[in-house]
Length: 319
Image (cartoon, rainbow, N blue to C red; front, side, top):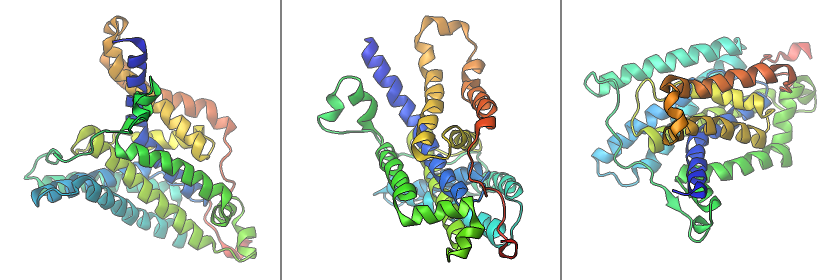
């Protein structure tokens, strides 16, 4: 295998791992730009992964037509539903956003493990998804050396990811909706003064984070693991939060940061191809993405440029 082909496959695997992180990071940007911190992205991602696996199993049992796409929709709806709980608690009842996020993570993980055991006769994981997504090659473009293999022979979710990065940037920075959403996250009192509904835009931000986190969770079960268990997500929601911080709450920056973390995960698989990696314990390779996450947070914490009102409940009486 020549070096160009190897690098192309490494980049392709990087995109497989980073696609889910990018979806979740984009969702986190929408909610934090509206002023609501959502630490519960890990839980919302878990809910999406669970919903996708169960929906795919049930659809396959009934014939299987369109199973991965129906599973994707189920995951988006499930993530949105759980994020609604987060929105009600933090926006309407002004609960502490960090605590609600932590509770969401614990609650969803426990609930999904219970439901899996209930639905699958006590087993710790769902049945294997038989009709998961397959890679789709774009005609002509997939034949380009290196970039063709890396970018244009991918799962449908990766192509959706390309589009959502552009759409998210356009919506946030080129539309009146994006301007209002960001104003609510920077100075909700001023936004309220000119007639912008802080509650409405914060609800929209949180619900978008749930939909995109659910999509990210489904991406893992429908492209990588082909089933769901309590270890399917394994902290990837937290890595996505690190990508948001590293990417300065910007869609393109967060996508680049998520790709960096995806590369760390891909290297874990490709390291086995090289002689030098035989001397590296597998545990070290598996730790790599999480160690990088800690390092990135440590070095970028003092340079953060978070929305000014992120994490602060809005009280109209104090404006």
